[in-house]
Length: 162
Image 1 (cartoon, one colour):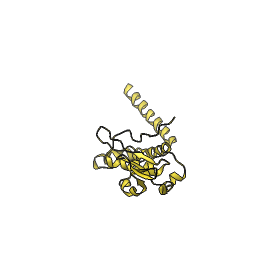
Image 2 (image 1 turned 120 degrees about the vertical axis):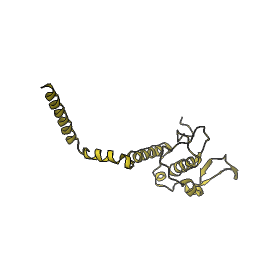
Image 3 (image 1 turned 180 degrees about the vertical axis):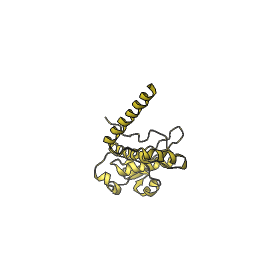
Image 4 (image 1 turned 45 degrees about the horizontal axis):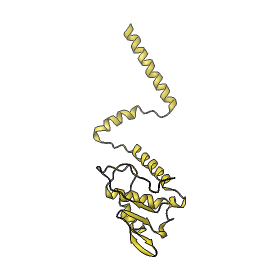
């Protein structure tokens, strides 16, 4: 049996980041209820891609009470439920994506972003320029370069032997 509540983030987050992440997951998956749990530890940078201010922008989509026998009962702090009118409003929800699949997508997207982020500062600009000269574009070319390097090494060793 699958657990009712799924742990989304393994690292501790700031309250703002946690709210943003909770609202993103609830808004873009079939899940309706989510909560934030207090943890020990220093807040770190979120692993998943989190847009700033998402919780504030989408606060109207969520309610902080549950309905029991037609009456409103307050939820515990940090817990929200997606409103009925906003259940099927995003592209991911229309595709019937569950929480686990949406999490996997977010992990994939954030991994792509981290790979491509390389800041060119004055310190490593020299290294970047040096690398750019030896950049290899096709695998066929790479093999030729390796064989040329091997030939050079052989020549150098032969010269030393003489």
